[in-house]
Amino acid sequence: MLSRRLGPLWLGLGLLAALALPWLVYPPVALDIACWALFAVALDLLLGFTGLLSFGHAAFWGSSAYATGLVAIHTGLPFPLAVLAGAVVAMALAVPIGWLSVRRTGIYFAMVTLAFAQTIYFVVNQWGSVTGGENGLQGVPRELGGVDLSDPFVFYYWALPIVLLGIAAAWRIVRSPFGRVLVAIRDNPARVRALGYPVERYEVLAIVLSAGLAGLAGGLFAVGHGFASLQEVYWTTSGKVVIMTVLGGIGTLWGPILGAILLVLLEDQLATAGFDGINLVTGLVFVLVVLLFRRGILGTVRHLLLRRRDRRVPDPEPGVEPASAPAVEPAR
Amino acid sequence: MVDLLQQVFNGLVSGSFYALLALGLAVIFGMLGVVNFAHGAFYMLGAFGTYVLLDSWGLNFWLALAVVPAALFVLGLVLERTLVHRLRELDALYGFLLTFGLTLILQDLVRREYGVQSQPYQPPSQLSGSVDLGLFDYPAYQVFVLVFSVVTCVGVWLLFTRTRVGVVVRAATERAELTRALGIDVGRWVTPVFAFGVALAGLAGVLAAPMRAITPLMGADLIIVVFAVVVIGGLGSIFGSVVAGFLVGMLQAVANLYIPSLSQVLVFVLMAVVLLWRPAGLFGREERVA
Picture 1 (cartoon, rainbow over the protein chains, first blue to last red):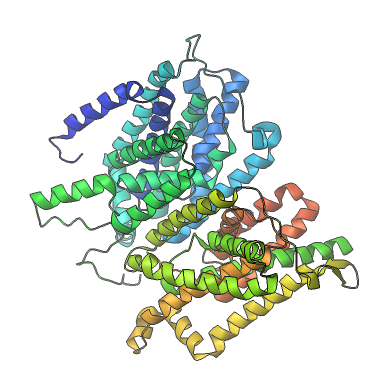
Picture 2: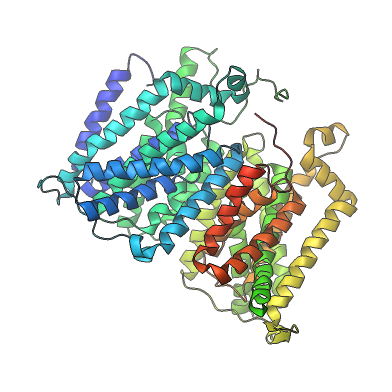
């Protein structure tokens, strides 16, 4: 990713790290990292590659967590199929939410997605007979044709292929012609529209795809923990995945994975140390990143590498107009 | 019928809080282009400040009504100069993210100090009884909140329409470049306007202290509803934000009478309808199309 020639090397190292993870950290934490990494990659598809800040991605992660749990409980299907069903539910939900949300851009899009996610939260909370309300959905089974998955260490290796497939899908999407159009929409929607592309339709499709990947992650999370709680559809979850993505570096795919690893490990360390104030630390980290470090970790590394190689390559900080661009868009 | 009227009144009272918060949000957005996620946290700080003043120093509600907004004004000045100001040239999304981080910090600081239990606070003795409104009795404090916030909203409206300062701020809000071109220093108004919006949130918090549960998370859920309110009203419009605030409050209360299970979701349904029918909001101007 950082360089075309080094690509396979990074990929190999990444795979190795993914395989070694449950040896390095407590296995349930390893699963959390895998799920959040896929979730953050899904968000990056929108934030980094389409330029849409969704502040309501908990709607997709959470609705899939509940749908996966319900399918697993009531049908006893093998867990990958239940997770798939959850992802389909998340995508179905993303169609109306996406379609309504792309009617506003920029900061409004963030507010509108946040509000829609809160709607899902209220519905899940109210619909106690199905979702368990405040108690959450308990007793989600890990079923796979008689294979014993009760050990989190074992389950991690059954879940990992789904996560990797999801990340590979994201990688494929951003390198497809479709992904190129998304990047163009991010950089200059007016020009893309002028070229005859239906911008909104592309954006909705990006939201649906992102929701599907977030749904895979949320479903796996529910199966891994054996329950789905209201936390999964709450706005703090939406915020957490944004923090991970920005911390790692938006528009890099590897960055959000790194961000997820760091944040999950940080929270785990703080919890283990008995420090009461995880949100305090997370909030501080985030404020510092936004103030001083807007490219995120990988974005900064890439920026330094690009600068060393070729000073003429423009790599503006996200959110800052490149100096050559006109300050004001001409009216249509 | 009496039930319905009473619900309309309840709605106006809860709408007062939406209106005050939406007003501050709109003023800050207009001047700085920042959607202040921490607005709910400032509201929460206002309520806690009221509680702490009484609990630690024995200062009553009326003093809190003056002291707390002033303190939050100062906090707003400091935060704008030290943090928000650094993001001036950037996309509005960074302001949103920064204030989101700030929200996490403020909420957790308060939670570590006071826990998640709700803190007790009684309405001031002068307003403890109820008032006979002809058809029904209504708690005096609630009537006070309604009157006070309507007066505040009208006051802010007059401030912005009838004074020189207000004209400058509105001009800067709506056409910053043009205002600058006319030789008006827009920059010097940015910090006070941010602090003013924060103080309004603090004022709403003081008003909430005697009638709402005082908890660290009291502002977080509220602010998301207020986001929906300003999308409905049109964030660029001060008038629209206030009207939408009262409208949403009433709608929720009336819905509570007929379909209680859906009353919380209704505001978001209304937002969806507005997005379909008038994407810029009921009173908003069309955004520049990208």
